[in-house]
Amino acid sequence: MTRFTGINHLAMVTGDMDMTIRFWRDLLGMRLVAGIGRPGYRHYFFEISGNDMIAFFEWQGAEPAVEKEHGAPVKGPVVFDHVAFGVDTEQELWELKDKLAAAGFWVSEMVDHGFIHSIYSFDPNNIPIEFSVNVPEADVRAHPVMADTGPSPVALEGAEPLPEKWPPVQKPTPLEERTIYPGHGSQFFPNVKK
Image (tube, rainbow, N blue to C red):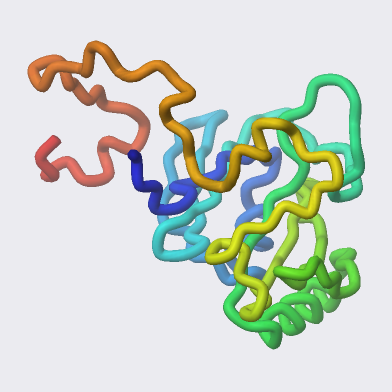
């Protein structure tokens, strides 16, 4: 079974990279750790944690999304609802709430979701964001819960992965065919053996 280490990066879009840097780096405190670009195209990466990043493509003509309330149902084509970031302590969550409000961003009241406490806001691109702290006494990773009054049949199969539900790999990629092709950013560390 594959062991995931976190979210390498979420890839978002902005029409104004400078404004995006001011929010994510300078207001939220996420380090700007990589930038790829050429005229008409940028792709910048901000460090969320030791394993996780959020990245932004800057595309000319891109505009902020239409503001949508977190969790409000929509119809038609849709990709995601909001992105949630964890913080270590409830004190940090209150400090973040005050920081967002002082900078002029709408920020919700603190919400108790049982296993997390959260605040909600939007970045300058109208990306809906949530900031959460775990409630130590309610660890859903250690003790999964299903409080859905009408859970789907597949959800009722439990928390643990059931890999046998998918066909097994019949023909793994042979070592001699495992080629890695250069992409944007491959120039960052030219002396690293590929």
